[in-house]
Length: 232
Picture 1: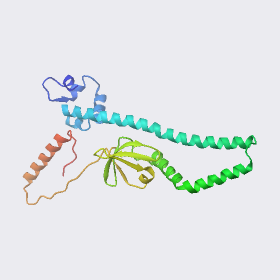
Picture 2 (picture 1 turned 60 degrees about the horizontal axis):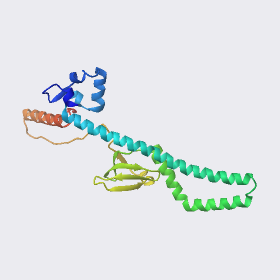
Picture 3 (picture 1 turned 180 degrees about the vertical axis):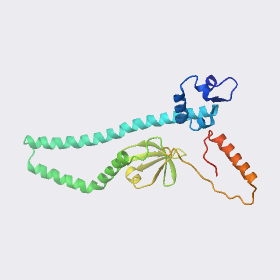
Picture 4 (picture 1 turned 45 degrees about the vertical axis):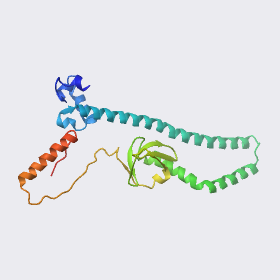
């Protein structure tokens, strides 16, 4: 791709090279959405293309996993509520046809209250998990997050639990009802993240300070595709 677009012998692609294949609006959209700060530099190296391809592949894999998982969670809920509706329908049908008596209804009510007493905490956890997944929804499959100061990648989301991967591929299972109570940082959704470094310069000539700023700027340009903030 790089060799077909770049001019022969060039080590980078310029805007005019891409404009041979697409209009100006699409070129600007390509730079802004796919190549980050490369538009500001006006040059695209072969390394930029490789990084972009890797990011596209990762996003594609994450989207596929997220789509599969998004369908799986509602399916689990559908099965649960379908089972409840079937049980209620059978009881009502027995009452309507006269097979079941009021004594059976009282017995079933007693058993229901007993089950509510025994599994009340479980029902509470299920409700909190559903709210966490569908209402709060702090992450998707493929997102890189931080929980309890540990970096994790979301591998699979279920109704009751979420599976994460550590940097060493160790799997961690968190109940969604527990995640509801924790502070979660999502790197994937924090596109505009930045960092600062503070240091003091004492008894240094202004010329050397300007030289240092230029060196820092050149280094950042070589590492960040030309995207720079204001250096003060």
